[in-house]
Length: 268
Image 1: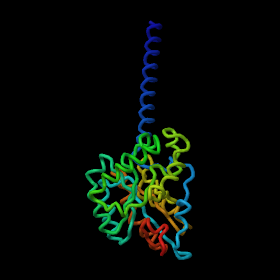
Image 2: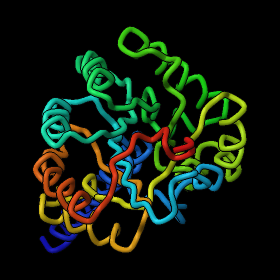
Image 3: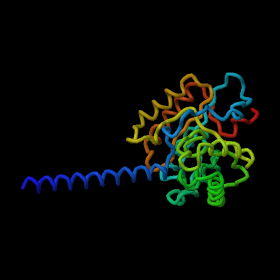
Image 4: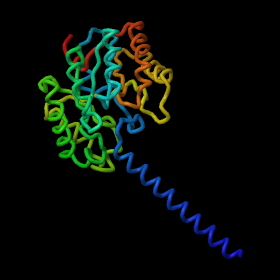
């Protein structure tokens, strides 16, 4: 009897271990297929690329660049309604994956209302886009083809790397030098790239509240004269929409001018 019970315990322990391994494996796979940018992907995010930081803005002027990654989505219209009500501009770094495609016509509204469009990724799958530099630019080409019916591509010059330009997740797929190579190729391809120096952390696990998102932005923006704010435009970041009016009000009350991303290096 005791021997039989012991064998059963060994069996169930072994089965439990297999289940845990399967779950862990699924989580690792999912990380490689990340659908949103994560602040944890980054090691040392610069304010903006050094060349872009050499803007000719008047000395002492305070500027804020509101940026939204990973849309368009089910929340985009709400974001655009708030921006229109507050009469401020933003930049949307868009994705062309299957769950985005039904919302792509909203890109026309974005540009009609004075917002800028930037490239983010077609698939946003780190495993796919960071396999090689060739794979990355093939993904960008596919994104351009996908948004072409809705956007004048001659006006699209900026991109944001999924995970940012200093992400280390890409090293697992394309080697430790892939981001350095991609950054060198950006200008050759006729683009500029931008990271951020204020992160809402609205895509963090646990679905942060609107109050937390607001506090994240304000705490990181405090003391900066140029703020490039990273937020997300996805179906799971509804609290970003709730926080957005207060975020805009804070920047307005503190004397910031709202800018499109092209002004990072545009003569003013």
